Length: 66
Image (cartoon, rainbow, N blue to C red; front, side, top):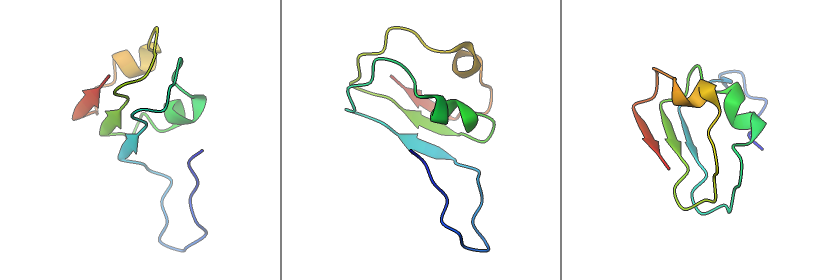
């Protein structure tokens, strides 16, 4: 889902993920991998039933929209 191009300065740290209007019913596992560095998680207009605890209690995020 999220890939890093093989460029020398490429980092595996994501700061923003925008998955708005993707018809998600659960949070993809790929997103959970980036929660330590994630600042903005945009999940507006999806069909989410529950959020993983790691996202609920993440202290690093500046903005979180569901």
